[in-house]
Image (cartoon, rainbow, N blue to C red; front, top):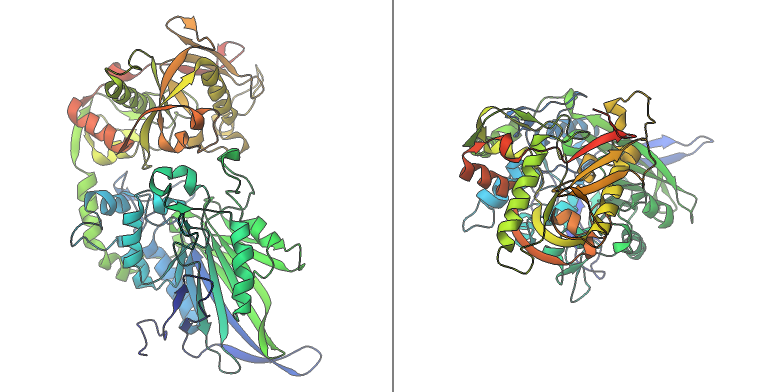
Length: 601
């Protein structure tokens, strides 16, 4: 078999339990023979596994929403072009044949670049383009990637086309066909690293995705795929990989380490289960962690059964970091044994972009820049989301106004047309700005960076109050008279901005001097306090409606309308029709933070 462009003799990704271990055979390099302490020579071999996760469609160090080079307060850079430079450096240091490169999912959603090739010029079209993420990852030379939950956002056809375009397998041991119960994607990838002496080192990478897909992308996967827990699937596959001769077993898991779930008890499976897998499933040497957008250079978890340490690492999102696992093996009793594992992360900001990657996708980048800079209207004044996490701002009011108007129009003439329409939104980006003057697609898209769609659900006054109380956990408790620092006021308990919902159509106060659970004063509508048995229609995004964030009542509330159009596009279309964005049309102070009745701001 002829060598491919990376020097491998071939590889396989298994699609069932009966597939024999086979895969990539690296060119000779890198083994060493050393003296053990206490005398006698021992054959040793070292190799390196590099990992990325949560790339979310980032190739360039570019922010399509600001139309400028990416920048944040921590000085991070982003993108696969930067990752490519780091990968090349490690390969040069270790020897190409002594390295592997894997990913832990969430690849094809998140930037306007990835959106463009899913929706504007879709890869699924007749003679459609090759997805930029596939092009970049193929060129860099990935060996395998686990599926992330956001891989399913655009539907199964887009995902399957992306899979077809990749030169590496997309792994999902716990993504099963709903009818047959068999893996819908390869559960694992296996490869051989050739050593100068002794048997080749056999490496297996088990891919695990997030059970929350069944909730968050229910519309795309219901009846087609099921997503059992990471732990149970790892317990099934790891022993089989060992029995098939794997010397090293690595798990690439699109799952955080906290052991918690954002969807509560709607599923029996833990969302952030990576550490639990390491602790409870014997036979794993290392775990590449994803999903949580956290930076974990190295974490060691002791397996409860074997007492051995399992090394975990999670690189920061969007290609900001590259995890590097270094494995040390020793030849004992006719087999390779893992002697040591360590992990660290490399910072993309410390290197330049790989010109080979930026040249490769220069045309695609230019098309997307031109697309997002199309003018769709004008704005009477500038609006910013900088203060949106702690005060009612017009920029979030715009989202709620468009959502509520869309639902009212959809319900006209139905039995629910007479009910008050409320709307739910959050501060999805603290850097979003609608400028005075010309407004472009990127300006509006920056308000809503997620591919959520819109639904309408029926709720009662009592349920609304509980919903608002749950949301208000987002604030730290600050007693009356104590100084209020906006920087420390929000995100209590690690709650992200996108899980703090504000609701328009009613007026209410959030008393941050009170304990969570008793903070909402009101709500009031039409000059009277909402009664428990009042009925409302709530315009809500599909993520929340399907249980994302585990808000009470909403996932079980009756659905009276839904569509498949992204909320972002609905807002863009509204701006195009209106021609002018004027806060006087939609801005109102529906909620405020107070302490004992006194406004905080």
